[in-house]
Each structure stands twice: as structure tokens, then as C-alpha cells.
Length: 192
Image 1 (cartoon, rainbow, N blue to C red):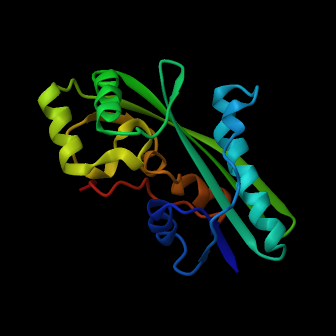
Image 2 (cartoon, rainbow, N blue to C red):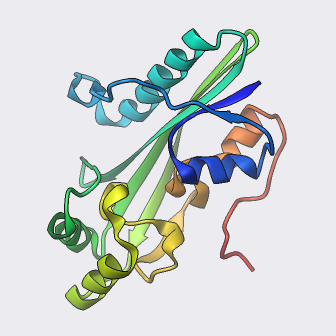
């Protein structure tokens, strides 16, 4: 059995593009590694390894895939906003700037472990206060790191360099190539 170790509906939807049938198990780990002494860029990969090994300890004969994604702006991690005011401040800070989205994923399979970090650069458009408020009211981004979802089709993003799916939370192009050993076209739901 193939298991996605995640509670994210976005990751589930993305993995379904590669694999139609899999189980979902929410890894019961405390995500307190952010308090560790590791460099910030290494944290998503370490979180994914913790999640994967936790689920593997319960399902030792199954294939496990876990992922953790972090949004970084000016060298600091942006988490999920606690309220609309914090979401507004985050989006105002992101306006007109480049941020880095890092996803670490870990695959545990028969006699094989793959752990990789994927980076995407996201360039925000210059946003007015009215545009930010409108976005928050329409999309309620309190459950999203950095206070936005790239899939919302809002005009927040000017452009990206790298994997669109990675910004959504699961770098399916890289997973396809390294886990499933097949190449897929870069995923973008807006591609014509």
C-alpha cells in the first residue's frame, strides 16, 4: 500500500495526479523542529523525515511519502497567520518582493529512501491595501503559510521560477522523476 503522510487536501489532490489509489495517514508528530539549531533551509526536509518515519513505524511494510513546505521571506520563515490582521501584515510585507518556497519530501519504500528539497522562487506583484483586504475577504488564507494560496487565481503573484506544484505543497514533478521514475510536464493548472 502507498501512504501519503499528510493531512493536507492540496497534497492529496496533487498526489492523485501521479497515483490514483493511495491511503492517507496523518502523522502524529509535534512540529517543534523549528526550535532546533538546524539552518532554516534544512527544516522542511527534517520535518518530512520525522513524519515519514513516524508513519513507517506503524506501517513498516508499506511505501510512505511525507512532505513539509516552508515559505521564506528575507531569511525568515513565514508561518500561517493567526488572524486576518496578521494575514494583512504578511501580505503587505510580501508585496513587490521575492520569496522562497522550500519543500522537503521523504519517500520510504522497499530498501529505498529518497529525501530531497525543492526550491521555487515566488515574485509578488505590488499590492495595494485594498487588493490585500479583498484577497483576505474572498479567500480566507488563515490556513496557508505566507497567508496566500497560489491556486486562488488572485493577482497576488507576478511570476514564479520553479515548480508551481511545489508552491501548492507537493513537488510532483520531482517526485514523479525520483520516486516513480517517470518524467511529467511541469504542473500548472493555468497552463494553456
